[in-house]
Length: 157
Image (cartoon, rainbow, N blue to C red; front, side, top):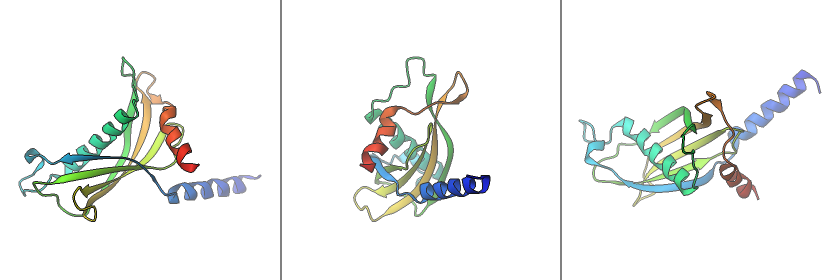
């Protein structure tokens, strides 16, 4: 295979990955707090990212993923995007849904929906984030835990 053919195959694999349907990973409900609101009396846009952190942390806890006593390995957020679709007002209960696509060696393309817990047709925001398992001592990526990778193998079966 020549370089052109190799690039074509890699391009097709990338398109396949980008078009792949994410699988559902986890959901978590959270009540908004008065302190989440801004001067306009809706949830501050920065708080939406805190909601993503909440669902990610709860997901990792549900998998019993340990980052070790010394906490030298963990996840870093390499990139995040948020589409704000409508304001969230007080009081509200949110349903945070997390999805993922087939992972790389150390990275996971995750996506999220922030919904009204009582009316799932109300979508407040959508987000994508790229998570990378990271070794803080070596200052480099590290393979993700097998328990995470197995979620995608199991879903393909």
